[in-house]
Structure formats: structure tokens, C-alpha cells
Length: 457
Image (tube, rainbow, N blue to C red; front, side, top):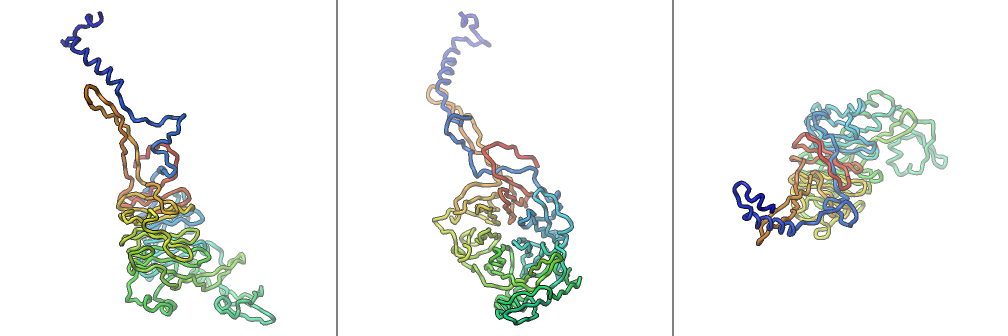
């Protein structure tokens, strides 16, 4: 017999091993496993099958490679440019979506200086007119007219001829704009008077003070807020729609959001005959005030608007880390207990916000080291910047007279961000996160249920 032939192994009687063989055979028949998804042929969708799953785009952008000393804000313009506020370098650096730096046309945003002092931008945004706005956290907002800076300017129109019902007048474009008496007067071509002073044209193409709450206009509109004794701290900016003709400014020192109206100043004529207004900002009221309820302001950190004119902002104060104000009414769009995004424990440190073309909402939670994505109605969808992998781990236990083997699924969570603060941007299906703790920018895009090995640093 076979057992007799191999009666002993290493001194052990084979008869003593027979019960062990039987136990093993019995155990094989008792294995309990969790069913896993098959390649095809069933309706199981898989644990990681998620239409809101994001994967990282390689390579990671380091600050050194982008020649950045710091990163305090990101803005995506309509022409596919990325504006990055670099407070440490007193500059706003501009890149294409590929990461390639822009040319000398954007040089006016480098080494910013006003009133003989280096200007360190904290926030940057822009509007459909290609006006780029920025602030350093103090009490003024500056701007740079990108479109005008790159155009061939003939000069400023100081006088034009208008007529109505036989009455003819030669007046400035500003008087025509501001005086209701001339509202129905029509332009008579060929009578423009133009100031083409080179120094004047250069000033139009350079960064300038757009909004000063203490200037002569704003002192009349709101003397109390204009007072230099009232400290202001402008920490976030968001442009209104073209029809609104407004810029929204978050004042963290006073917990208010200021609506700044774009007031035309001079009419500029280009070499191709096109005309466009230059602007200054004037106070146009508070749209959100201090408080702890929906639609109020408490330590604002980030702000953005969408194509419909809705306004979104994040904050650190009680009780809500996020607010959305509806276009037009500027009333709170979400409600506690109805919209998940308004849950009191939803955010620990909401530092910045972005909105994509489909009105999905992205909130950067610095304490969580992740971005939370929400639907347009405030339903939580996914985490970005968190690498989640399901691991299959066999677990063998002795139960009764047999072994039981089960496959246990364990979620392995790895976070890519480190102390990311106030730097988040969305462009189409791409999410850009300023990983300030690691001095780099991470980019993510929507993907199907696939496994991707992220590149090493």
C-alpha cells in the first residue's frame, strides 16, 4: 500500500497524519468567500465603479518647475490661461493649460509694485471683459485690462458729435453715458477728438487701482465704510456676469461681501476702429453681512461665481463652511436639513471653492486634506485627492472542527495633499489643487473604473 511504503516522514508515523489530511479536505469544502465582480455576464457594477471617480494626471507640477515662490490663488480665464498668484514673488504668473509659461505680453503682472511698495497678491480673478482683478488682503483691489494691454490703441476719445431731431452737440462719451438727456442722441461719425499721448496710453495698459473704498466717489456713497479708521481685509474676489457689470469682494475684517459696480471712465479707441470703455470700481452695497445663519458671512476664505451669476463662498466661522447665493435675489440657495452640503459637520476647514460648467461644486477642506465634490443641489458625490484602493485579504480562522477561510475587503486610503490651503480651480473636467504643504500642483480628471499607478514625486 502507498501508506505502508511511506510509513513515516521525518520520524512521524503516517497514521498520525491521516486525521490532518481529512481535516484539510473538509476545510476545502468549507471555505466561505465574498463574491467578487466578474469580467462580464452579470449585473454587478463593482465596488469602484463610480462616475464621479477622479484620477491624477501626470506629471505633478512643482513650484520649482513653474518658477513659483508661493501659490495663493488660481484663476482660469476664458481664453484657456491659468493665472497663479505668487505672493512671495509679488507676481501673478500666467501659464497655458499644458503648464507652459506665457510670453512677455503678461510681463506687467510680474514684480508688482504700487505706491513704491511691493504688492503681494493674495487673490486673483477675472471677467468676460478680460479684466483681471487682484488683491493683497488689504483695503484695495487692483486690476489689469488684459485685452486692452494686448491691443493696438489709438487713444482716448475726448469728444464725439451726437444729434437728435436737428439738435447737434459735441460732448464727451462720459457725458453721453451719464446724462439721461442725451440717452436718445445718435452718434455722428467722423468727428471724434482723440488724445493719443503715449504716457496716457501706457497707463491704460498697466495695472491700476480699480477699487478704493476711501476715494472721493466712495466717500459719498458710504462714508462710514469709506473711513480709513475702519480696517478692511479683502481676501477673495469673484466676477459677476457681463450683464451685472459687477465685482464681488469678500471683506474678512468686517465679515461682509461688497458689490462693486464697474463704472465706465474713458472711452478707448483701437487702431482697428473698435471702441471700449475703461472702468473704475464704486461701492454698490453689501450683499451679505455678518452672522451665523444661511447667507451670512463669518471669516470668508474663498469665493467664486458661475456662468448664471450665482455666488459661492467658503468660510471658517460659525456655523456653515459653505454658502451659495442665488443670482438676482442673492438669497441663500441651500437649507440646513435639506441640502447635504449644509450639514453642520460637513467641513472642518473649508478654504477654497470651485464650480465647473455643469454647476458641480468643489470645496477644498484643508483639515481633511481633500476636495469634496457636490452636485448642483448640494449632494455629496466624491472625494478628490484621496487615493482609495480595495484590498482583498484572506482571513483564516478555526471554527469547531474545521478551518474557515473568508476573503475580507479592506479600504486602503492614502491622501496626496498636505496642508493644502485656499488654492483650488476647475476647468472643464479638470481639477487643479494647490498642494501647498508639498509645494506642488496636483491635477485630476474624471475617469472610468480603472486602476492607475500614480507617478512618484
